[in-house]
Image 1 (cartoon, rainbow over the protein chains, first blue to last red):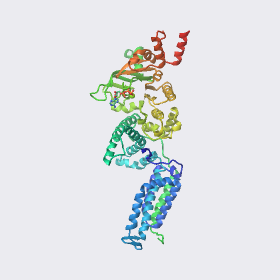
Image 2: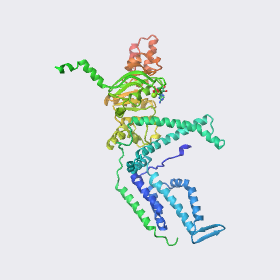
Image 3: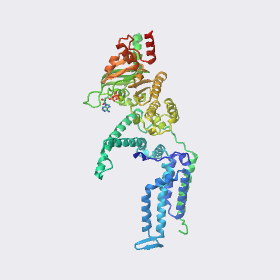
Amino acid sequence: MIKDITIGQFFPGDTLLHRTDPRFKIIILITFLTSVLAAKSTVAFMAVLCSTLILLVLSEINLRILLKSVKPLLFILIFTAVINLFFVKGESMLLHWHFIKIYKEGIVNAVMMVLRLVCLVVGTSVLLSYTTSPLDMTDGLERVLSPLKYIKVPVHEFSMMMTIALRFIPTLVEETDKIISAQKARGVSFDTGGLLKRVRALIPILIPLFYSAIRRAYELAEAMECRLYRGGEGRTRMKVPHVKGSDYIFLFVMLAVCVGIFLLNSYEVPFI
Amino acid sequence: MARETVRPTVTEYIRRLKNKLMFIEAKNLVFSYKEDAPPVIDGMELKIEKGTFTAIIGHNGSGKSTLAKLLCGLLIPTGGSVTVDGMPTNDEKMQYDIRKKCGMVFQNPDNQIVASVVEEDVAFAPENLGVPPAEIRHRVNSVLKAVGMEEYAKHSTYKLSGGQKQRVAIAGILAMEPECIFFDEATAMLDPAGQRDIIASMKMLNREKAMTVVAITHHMNEAVEADRVIVLNHGKIYADGTPLQVFSDVENILRAKLSVPQVTELFYMLENNGCRCGTDVLHTMEAAERIEKLFK
Ligand SMILES: Nc1ncnc2c1ncn2[C@@H]1O[C@H](COP(=O)(O)OP(=O)(O)OP(=O)(O)O)[C@@H](O)[C@H]1O
Ligand SMILES: [Mg+2]
């Protein structure tokens, strides 16, 4: 049951988005998110929607998978929509029933807010999490953040931690499953009784899990020492990212879009 | 005149040369995990020569893994000393150089795989060494080929079977190109064919690359392949010699709660039942020949 959890849902493929250098993707993503948040006028907003759609098409990600990623946000989306719908006041009232007043601006705002959130989530998924392998991602992050080394931010250690976490999450998930089965075989029940009883039933899972995780950590540290690990200093990497022309073009286009959206902010679609 | 007197005699010269070739040397080695606990390794004298293939056997808990970790400097002796290629392991400054020379494949492959992709994991040690990227790529490819895992280079390490993980772990150490490798029950999870493959590659490393190999094992047919077998019992060396010397003293081995290779056991039984055939047989083909002779 726990096995269904997937971390870093990466869908291998060979599209422009997959091929782009992770470092560039991180910067492109930041540019994209900036433009999504900066779009205020309806025209600018249309441009944002268009660029999201283009990214989506470029990634060749299945729409059903994408909907799944938006689903957990459904509650927030509805909440945002309702708040905007009922509480934004404007000039042209469309509906007045008892204390409920709905304005045209409210509807526009609600739609924009919801779409903006969807664009943020879709953009991040499509640009980064769905098209970048977790390893490339941590690697890219390490390289993008590497200037922070000079102000004593432990960038390498952070990325090593991420790499190891990614490596051990499936192992620990599997172990949890095993422990749960073992405890069930001993007659522990996890889904009966009141809240307190259920929480208490977790103890026989957590203690063996922590014990084994600590033992694993100890052995892993020993193995890493044996394999000559001593931090990021003097370390080389097997995969040297080589920047391609397409990476620069992609980044340039995205920057242009961002600037364009800032410029478009002063235009409104006449009828809305 | 003075030069004449310091020139060593031939025997002295050979002794010095031998000492130089001595790779790992343990003197009066004592080790215990906790201060008040009884020592796991209890006063051990051991020398391992450069370029030899040594097997260590002993029952569960006899201290094999502990000894291996002591010999490659991962554990620091609580008494006595260990030197690797002349460098004492308790010298903090030497530790990195010692680790460069001695690689170790651990008992549990799950906890020694660092990265989530096979080739990334194999590249870990050379990356730490600061080897240039093209050279790392070359090493990774050739090492994965050597352990028969080249098709799995891009696979996720988590989905591999136990035996495949063990092969990746071995590849990870080979990529480091150490002078000496300790295999701590590295074949325990492999099927018979996989076990034969790994033993063959251990022998190849030893013969062709002149690598010093120390293999800890519970499989007697693996120990037989070594140049030298060391039997541990209660933290002490119980027997030490060529496989033939060690295993032909069958009673002695049985007393240490160990077994001997199957053919040796067969000849031991024959001998006990009044057949004068000796117990100095280790390999099946040898046994067949000996039996053939008996019947003539
Ligand atoms: N980290 C540790 N802390 C405390 N005691 C330990 C530790 N590791 C091993 N021991 C103890 O040291 C003794 C020898 O253990 P060791 O792992 O060296 O045996 P082994 O010969 O490798 O056994 P096996 O054949 O099962 O691998 C055992 O009694 C064990 O309980
Ligand atoms: Mg052991």
